[in-house]
Image (cartoon, rainbow, N blue to C red; front, side, top):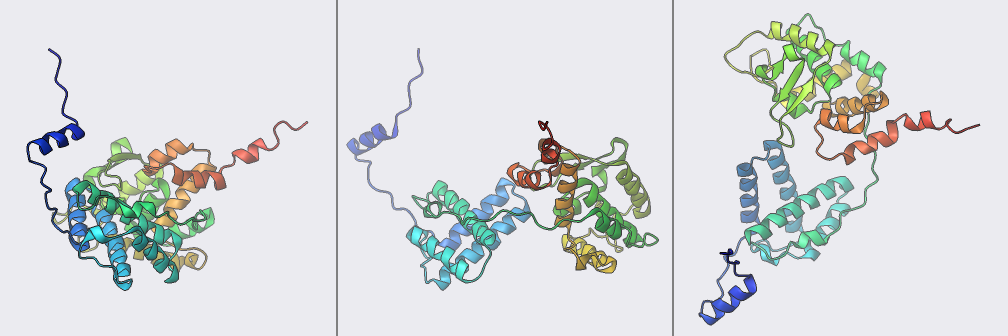
Length: 324
């Protein structure tokens, strides 16, 4: 016997009408703030990283602030219109925000709107009808090899903090790791015998393996001996009080060494500049974009295409070919 088909929505509506069951169900009113709270809670339950949830919270807070300035009613999210989101974009432009910042906030609003549609809070995601602003794509500052050498020569490795900071900067240099990923590494994530790191907390929530260079393996071996064992934390990188080193502290320490080395007068000194420099040097060395994507943990390869367009030497090698 063949399996009976399910009843399609149109036929189901006719049956409900015939049975007198077509009375409209009143949908409860949901405010903008209530919808945002539901959206953020959903992100936590779904397993989004704390950084991602915090980012959505920050951008939606800015969206709400702008709506309040524009006297947009927020007591019923169904009353939001495309014109309200267009007015939001204009508000942000007039306030002097960068186009990339405005686009980030608008995209957060669109993702939030999609969630509200799925939950039945609204029928249509009106934010999706507003186009993002055109942005001229460019790559931020990177280190030169000479600047990197000066930076890596600055920490005093006769002290624990100096050895730790040098190890951190070498890890940024040799792996292109994100600062949030580095701060989350635990001792058991370092496999010296396999010359690898097993990252458990990543931006896209997929664990990945990063191979270690020989010099980074040697540096980590020395650092871990000095770090020793503590019952207070499993964190790889710790303070002198045996607590996990925070992201903000790592950022501060890199700026400090950049200032002491005089590099900060030439280029911004931050973990992300290390990451951009890693991508540049790998492309210049001939590493293909797909391998680089795996090393850096990018879910979208388009970000790396900008680096290839600027730093690839393929065109230099090809320009003389075919010339008589």
